[in-house]
Length: 160
Image 1 (tube, one colour):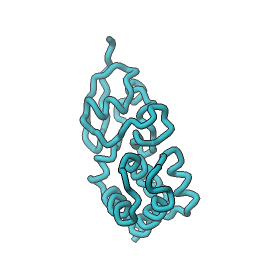
Image 2 (cartoon, rainbow, N blue to C red):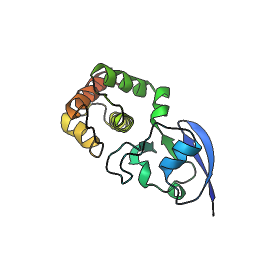
Image 3 (cartoon, rainbow, N blue to C red):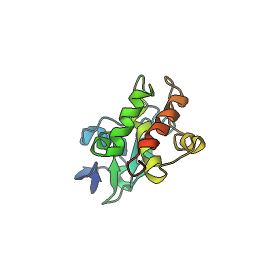
Image 4 (cartoon, rainbow, N blue to C red):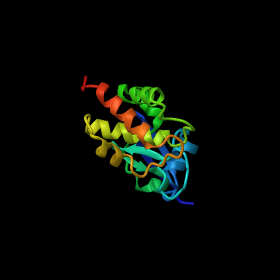
């Protein structure tokens, strides 16, 4: 089987991977790099549990062939959020607001929240809901997630 070598910046660290070009990014992150935060829910890009940030934009990693991720691409998984002030803040407010129950959707939700607040530190409710479209939550419901993002926005780095 043909393989390609890619060099990515994953959670701030340079990683070299050698993979078949059509292997899903989700599988490379979980199986090759040991980053288990992104999960497979639907495998069709409809639930958001496999969301990662690619060059700052939320993307569903179950639909992305590793061969399409170019050298030098910055990938952030939920594990990488611990290295950022905003990521730690989001984890804290999600817990404080009761926005996480089973936890299955939370990595995708928090990464989507992080991407939103990084580009718009003062979003209104409509912007928050739009930023989380495609991330399904069956336990908590979206109102608690909206409240968590609003709370995080009030304390967002540079927004104090």
